[in-house]
Length: 95
Ligand code: SF4
Ligand code: SF4
Image 1 (tube, protein in one colour):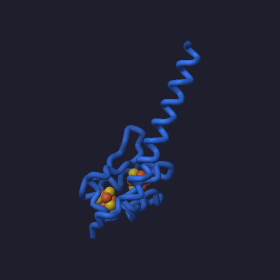
Image 2: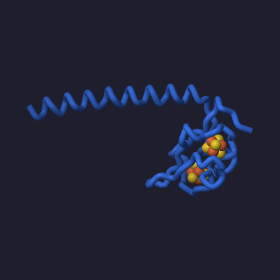
Image 3: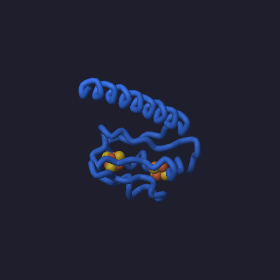
């Protein structure tokens, strides 16, 4: 059953790239990257949780959609701040 408040999340450290979850997801929300790590497209995932039991390494869990969205925003902010600091350091080294 679909739950629009939930979304699948994959722990890349646990993913062995077997592709079983990709075949299991009828919404085609999971793809394997060039690094053979699975990832979920949040705009396509319906929250049905079918993929969770398909993963033999327990890499997939269902999380609250809003919590994940907040985590992504925090990560993007931290990444942006890090890039600004590195750019300043690079400028000082070059000048
Ligand atoms: S089923 Fe699990 S280990 Fe296999 S590709 Fe999906 S997330 Fe990775
Ligand atoms: S929860 Fe359902 S729709 Fe979302 S990735 Fe897993 S199988 Fe696909």
